[in-house]
Length: 410
Image (cartoon, rainbow, N blue to C red; front, side, top):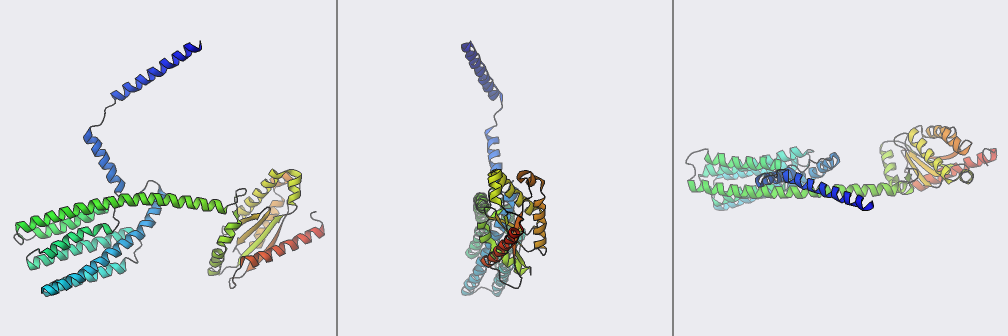
């Protein structure tokens, strides 16, 4: 019987395999031209923009990263343009050029200087792209204005045209912006060179077209390659930053209660204190621990003790202000750091809530009492974590002594 079942299973699998082969053979395969088109479309889509990603978090990260990189690119290109215009003025001076050449290059130098300064204050990538576009187009117009005035496109002007295309990849354009800027620059030169019939001879026009097309192609391909590399770099950096933040979070969180741990308090106290002082707020520290916690563990088990700790953190987090930092120092000892004006009253309300919490009453069979000690540093004073902790801890044990003497817990 087992042999028959195995034979039937093998026959069924063979039939399924044959059916799959038949379906694959019936599925029409795309032509080589369509495959080439799909690959080219995917390639262009992957470099169309350096900041567009499916994941919105990656896109936000890319916006922040590319803003500074674009700013640096615009500043570098404008600085190079400034140096080039100064060098061109010196060159034409040695060649004995007319005054209009110096006037044109001095205006370009001023424009370049203006863009260097302006780019430091721009806060949008699109505006930085516009500054780069203005510099390139106006430079192209100026070059052709000089050519029309002199009636010839000499070697220096041809070199300037090629150089103009070569500096384009300094700015981290996406493919979308690259198509616009390369097209505008090319059209500027082409329309200007053909605007007056007979101004330039045929050989000059063909030479100009060849150099422009070659330079534009190289610039576009370079921009595409740079965009692909930048996108991969952004994705890798985002994943690395995310992993680092997760590790940082794990290292500063208490795994049992979800509260911050002592490492977090030590690493962030100076920052929290500085922000409180800048806001003119007093900084409060409370040190808490659960009365007779060892007895609770011994009588009801450690899992009940763990539940009590978790519930304590939950009540504090739900009822304190959003600026409160709840920290588990170890065992049943906690610290809360906050700048709220009613801090001590809020802590007292939380402790009263814990004493009447139905879940904790079910666990312990009696109210869970928590003692607290407080310390405060006014906005005009300098906060020190060790001193604040000593004052709060001393106040805590004073309260415990009062409770012991009154017989409120054994």
